[in-house]
Image 1: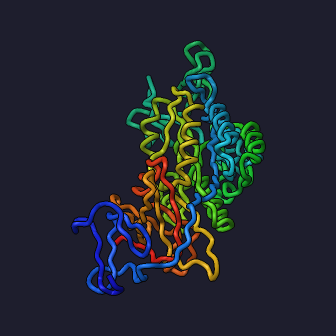
Image 2 (image 1 turned 180 degrees about the vertical axis):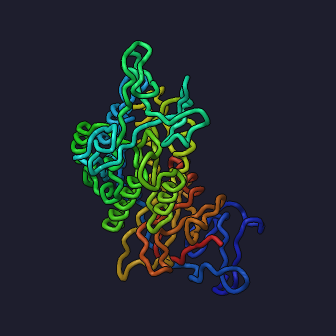
Image 3 (image 1 turned 90 degrees about the horizontal axis):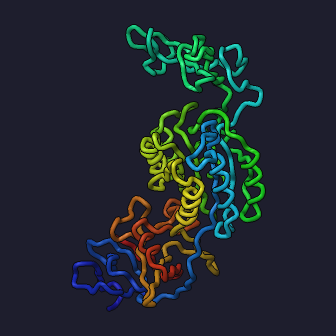
Length: 448
């Protein structure tokens, strides 16, 4: 059929569900293609034959900014015996040493970062100096018992109760109120130490500067392991500025290395307890802004929690992962083998982070015409299928899938990678023998 005669190809039009051809490219029948004038969108005005060059698609090299929770609760024991921190150390070191991790760039930072001159604990504001006030734990208590309600003043408490300082009995190793009283075994109810409010840093630039700068595995592994072994859990959980800093660092890395895929890995054992934003939806919004930016920076989330907190943690950390564009968080229960579960999660993330995101091959001559790029997949039967292009991630069809550029060339930017829509990615990953090729030279086949 001659040029301009008007060809329409689509599902439900009596077309066989096999492969169709346009300009030398095999086109999946699920992709609607039209040519010529009429009410349908025009997606190709190329002659039936066009010169092409093809190359096997290469996944982007991966860089990870690892933001590691090192708050004092990481010293809590797991059911297997080691502390959460020790289990995380072991799993992360194994991940760095794994031959399958070779080629990944890694930066490492911890939260909280602590002011070195601030007191470790406090009982009164004067103990904190310039890093106060002192935040002690007080609860509502009456003549006979405590309600367990945290308070700042008696006005926060139910009628008949007062806001009193929380304490502990050394001999029984349990809580008591009020601090200053006498425990059942006769020892004093010692005040439970508080924290100087400005001891943990809340400024974003602190967390945007890695404790271990970017380097590629396996060469980077010794420095990363040494840093983990030297670090000790301490402080509270300033998740907001920690994630903001990680995002800043990841964005800077992307600008410096546009041919790399940069992702954030947030490992935590607690919900935010200080600094702003303090609420989980606010922190999820930070992750969402990064994940939907240009280029996108996804955030993967791993949580390590005790059995009593795991359900609540899953709900909250899933909000962070969803905001970060990675679906669901991995929440590990401390009754599990934490080290093994964390290693499994890290291996999954290593695969997911660069799944279905490919380099744009170099072109000869005058460079790439981004309107003449196509993506083909070839399965075990050896027949290539062209995957249709969509405008952007939001235009991905949950059934037909497609692909899009990381940067839309119509905005004046220059794309650096090709990304398969989620449904297409799942199909590609579900076929062991599939090969993906990038074909240059023919008008881009577009899903309409």
